[in-house]
Image (cartoon, rainbow, N blue to C red; front, side):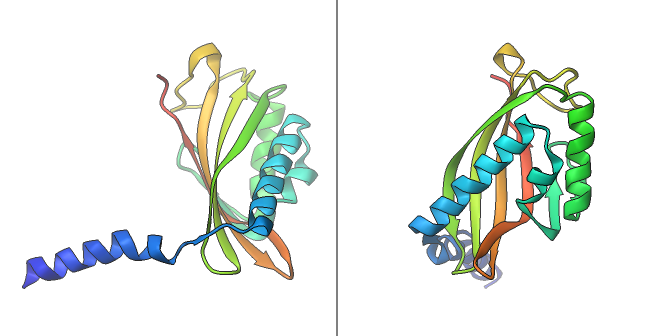
Length: 161
């Protein structure tokens, strides 16, 4: 009986979320691409105000080394500090990999990023070929009053090949 219950929980955990995910429509895909474009543009300009446009005030970020940064202000400040230090003059590129709708007001945007020109690599970062830092990012976006912004973000380094 216990084994059947455990098996049922595993099946429901693995398959129900996937069944509930709705393919992205044009509006969601456009919002996801716009978010990634703002992310890239603001990074490459080291523009904290523009970077902040992507996040709701209560957003949370788990950075690549596992630190949790709470609130838009703290997330922006972390990046402004990075752009003034080890990431000064760095360049990032990014591309949406997948968009999954979680109802009409939430979506998960997965995108991949590559950062070049980093002065000092952060702890735990595996530098790829040509000293590129590569990451998978997962952003949960929420739509409020017709506007999509990031509510929660996770940034994970990709191991060097």
